[in-house]
Image (cartoon, rainbow, N blue to C red; front, top):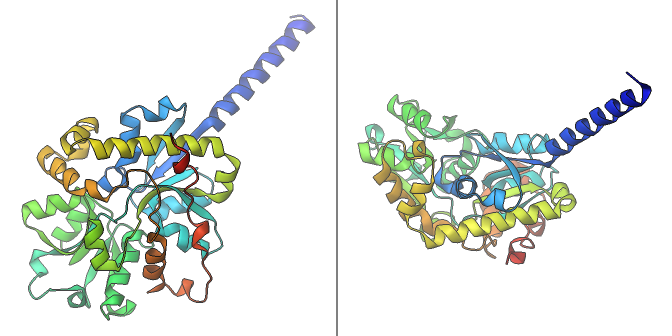
Length: 333
């Protein structure tokens, strides 16, 4: 082979290599704290509707049952964004990590505290769960945050009950059936499945904005897309595309029925009961925002809830304005 051909071969390999690196860097990985949960519906629905591709985004959705683990991956730089609860941005600021919600999906947690019917006798409120084991998706997850707050609010100290990480869906249901947990916080469609079989009843409902205000004292912005502030500032064009995608998806949710939305989702998301899934979808649609904008009164409520039980927030000056941004969603056409 001539020197010229060798040089061309080396150049070609170099270009191919740089192209592969570029293609890899163009991929944006979004970790979802439970892909099948209705509270995180926009992440998968956007993919099903082809909205990511329409914006020219190369997106990989990764499923992680507990939000706290997704948060860890974000800090480590393994993913570029998380579809999880806004409260993590406040919790992380107290630990020196800067993150922001860039699209706010919901104005309510979409979660409930369920009590096993085997242990429901005499349980009229959170105070009656003293000494019991409460199931949460993960320790340090938003379900654990809210469970702890509701117990402390009802005069039960943190040592007066136990939390057990049981995930959601089948693992949550199994834990309740086997009496590993006597109560637990979960989301749809797990809620509907347990109510339908009569294995549990609702103790605290936070699936609507009104019910949430009663339980938590105000609007509680929950599901969102959050990213590290450094990434947001360095990739504003990419972040804007995500804002475009999710606002468009939120508008779709607001203008379509539960049945129409369910028809777009993977069949296994309905867990073999389409009617229950559609009902849960229709009942829960009201928690979603229509524009992705953070409700003005929401961040303070979330801070109040977290400060109610987390020692790490005591004495810390949290700048709520740095935990979210509305710049991108307000620029959506």
